Image (cartoon, rainbow, N blue to C red; front, side, top):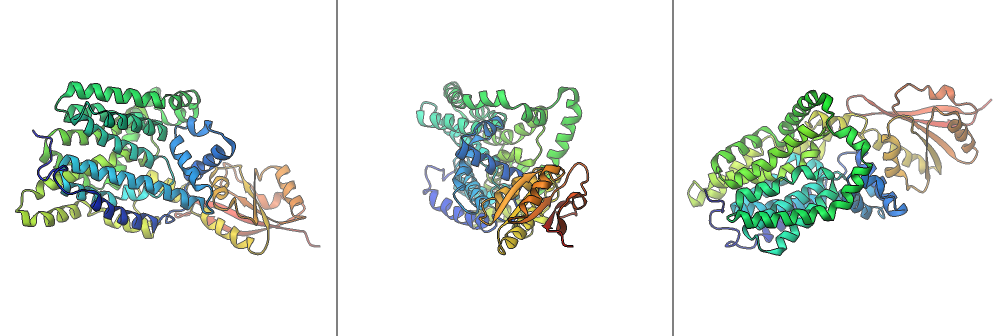
Length: 499
């Protein structure tokens, strides 16, 4: 069957960039309006902390050892701003904007102009995209690179002797690996795309092999450093062969929840219907680019969150756009636009209420369980931390203060507060284990020159902080909780003893 779009094709129609510009305007309205809807997430704070250390101290090993250099380097652009979190999220949203552009361009080349508009609408209103376009993480950069790579693969398949798409594919492979080393699990889209799309497979495979070799050579320093310094990451995310069966089952159950929550049931049904309607190389390539990463992650890795498969979203939406375009083309020309709009709305039926909650009340949003724990209710979430930072800023209006932040438990409080208020001129943050007698003594000494606060966070064992501070009166100011009631932290004020 033909793999070409029906007339008017991407070559014959008007330039797509006017329409893409309109979608970008809507994109930035929806993303920039709600960049701070979710509070800081621990992994965001870590990315910004690594960016500071990279640019201020030249410490590159940690982001390289974790396989996330590109995003960390990009978030260095946020460091001069007073609100580093907002600036970093804006940078992340720019990566999402590039993904939107690549998605629309690839859909246009595969299925035509009408499908491009449908794909843009699906991406714009996808809950999966709306969540991660607004978080300062690495996965959005990876999704951009993989979607751009798929666009380059389409061009390689049709123009195998052209050096430009070959160079583009090589650079995008390198950038994808530098974004996140898990990019290697998405690279099967290259040979699969050539096999499904290329009229002259031998020449196209040769050109694609050159592109892959170029990309992997460019990324080889990153890969070498990662392999030598990724013991902690490997122990956390690589499947242990001794328990691989139970791990795979658990991962598949998590993935089922990710797909049902973020892709939504109507969109998944639309994708299956599109595959049945199209039944050609384009549909098989797109479906494989969605399914294969899920399979590879389940077999070889232990992903903690749906964001690990964020790069599967664009091919899914492009597949749906092709099916909608095919169905719309079956009605008379005067009704095709209305048919495409109606079918797109049906595919988005469950997404719109999710989107509303994500923008206006993320606590109520129906996240999959893993993401709800990480972003809303669990210890990595910034709920409670954001409110604590606001209270410290309010206290700082009355004069300079020192806040001792407990490091005896999770890293969420010290790392996140360092990003939120670490540069406040009137707030001095001191990290230390509040269970340590030395740290408590330094707090009492600090009271001689400044107002002193202490922030106690969740620990593996309870600490009766108030009773263990000698030489000062300890007043509990406020207790902070996350949605669902989990304790996020407690703010104490230290005062001199009165007799």
